[in-house]
Image (cartoon, rainbow, N blue to C red; front, side, top):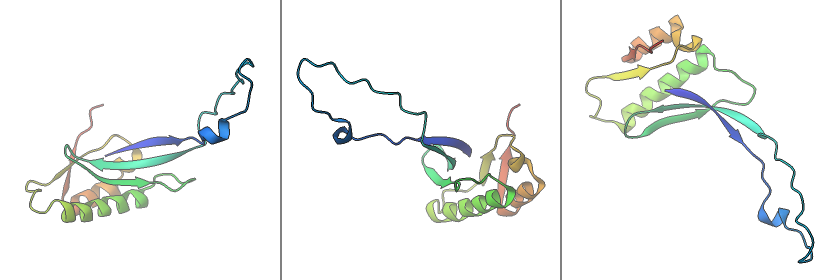
Length: 122
């Protein structure tokens, strides 16, 4: 599982950037495009074979305990549906050391769902 910021840009199409000019006239100067029009936080759960869940955090919100716990429940439901019979030894989660991942409520929910932690190296 990992969270990553995704940046999106508002680029103009070829049609929008076309200009009529004479063959000898200099090319128009283009201004630098701003870094990004916006950013979205994506939470992604995957294994070596597939991506199971991608969730985009609504704009203006931060990841809090309740939101993260709901993601874990969604993951459990998706794993039941997609991996019938494949998960025999349990699910191992590798989390970073974010406060939401280390919270007591998160640890209890992980135990309740039958997942196990892999310790993240410092």
